Structures are given as structure tokens and as C-alpha cells.
Image (cartoon, rainbow, N blue to C red; front, side, top):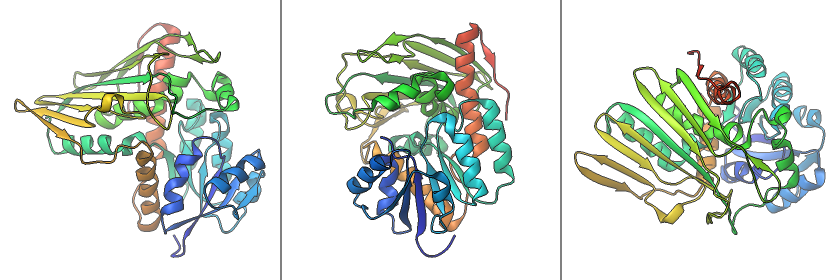
Length: 358
């Protein structure tokens, strides 16, 4: 990568782009050069909000991709548009950060993985949960044998309501309600990608997945795939589950999505609790370790949700400047997609789904 700032182009300027741009705006190694959105006016408003009102705006993907000042593209589009945009960016020779999930179907994911295998530029599927400071610290502790060999993981995903949280546009809600565009439910498949990434990151690939996926209507008419319970088995007699509960009257104080997440990892000689995600219910200690009969609390970290995006993007910038492997690589993101797809398949077919290794 060249010594001058890395030229960044954003493809899609929806709600989540506010978090993706933070590190690009503040890192001296990058410069946002261009924004592409089907609604140029929306992109212009974002540029103004971000303090880069002079940046180029277009509604033409090819115009952005043919811009020689763009080295890296951040693709923030609905799931059904991921494959075409990623392949086009590869044809243009750009480094790529693709929003999760990589594709709505495994068939499309296989096409993308195959293309990336022969691509000579860094390709990343964006995953921020693995970079949230409490999660990153928990992974360090486990690598240091703090709880022995992990035996189980329990993940609780808990959307509610928030007077302080983000207002999500009707258009963003609409395409997520269409399985032909989203690939699956908004909590199990879409947001669930993050939770399956956590299970994968701590425990590896599952061997078997079983799911009960419910359906509940929100006050705004949109539907959630809750209440839901997804169980999984890993090699070596290890287990886990993801519980998704929609609490329509649970007030969550957060500037972001009206949701919080908790994780418990039990090992052969200890337990780790990660007590915050999007929100921070009850001001709980972010990370707690129990071992040798005593508790250790970890408070010395910034748990604001945007930090997960900052650290994920910073890692990729470092890869572009200094080499190394991005997180997630395409084949890894395909493993997580298989994980979440197995949950959807299990609920549909009312049976456990065996997951291939690798």
C-alpha cells in the first residue's frame, strides 16, 4: 500500500455508516475520498455531519470504483447486493471491507470465497463484535488459560426499547423484512451473525445446530424472529446456546440500537462473564472472571459500542499498511454464515442440522 493516505470510498451511507467512518476520519493513514449512495442527498447530509462536506458524491458504483484515488472500499449495502458489489470492486482492484453477512445464501458465499482465493488484494468481511474491548480481553484471558479449556458458551441477545437509541429508517426495516433480500430473520440471521461469530471465535466450528425460532410483531408492525433458542454442539463434547428474547417494555439506555447482549463462557477451571454489548444494562461490570474460588473484575476498558467498530477498522488499516490477515477472511465468514444458516434450516425442518467442518 502506498505511503500517502489510503483513499477510502464508502458504498452505502445508511445508519450503520456513522460507526464505520469513525476510524477512517480519525486515522492519519486514511482519507475518505468519495461516497456512493442511491440517494445522493442522503450521502451529502452524511458528509456534512461527518465534517467532510467537500467529498465527492455519486450514485454510480462504477464511477466510484473507477476513481484512481480510491484504494479501499467499504461496502455497506443490503445483503442481496453484496456479491455483485464485491465482485465489481475486485474487478476494479480495490481492497475491500464487506459488511456482514457476506451474502444471503451459501451458494453466493461459495462464489465469493472462490473469487477471493485468487484475489491479490486484502479482502475483509466486517465483524465488530470480536473487537469489542470486553470480548477482546476475554479472548486474551482464555488464551492465557484463565479458565482452562472452554466447555460451553451461553449468549443472550436482548432487544428492547430505548428513548435514547437510534431511529432506524423505514427503508432499512423494509428490506430486512424480506427474506429474499436479507437471507433470513433480523435477529437470528442478520444481527445473529455477530452472536454466531462470538461462538465461533471462542469455541470454533460447531458440529451440530438445533433451533427453535419464534415470531413476534413489534409495535411498528415489523416482525422479530423471537423468542428463539439455538443450541449447538462442538467437537470434544463441548456445547453452547444462543437465546434471543424480545422485551418490548425493557428500557435500554444507549445511543445505538435498543439492544444488549451478555455472554458466559465456562471452562474446566473457571468462568468468564461479558456483561455488555450495544447497551450496558444496570451498569454491570463489563468483564468478570471467576477462578480459584475468587472473582476478578475488569473495568479498565472503554466499553462504548463504537469502540468495536473503531478497533475492527483500525486492525484492517494496519493490515493494509503493514501486512497480515484481516478479520474476518472470506472463508472464515463463510463458516459463520454456515453456522447461522444451519439455525434457519433447523427451525424450518424441525431437526438438528449437522455442520460440515472447514
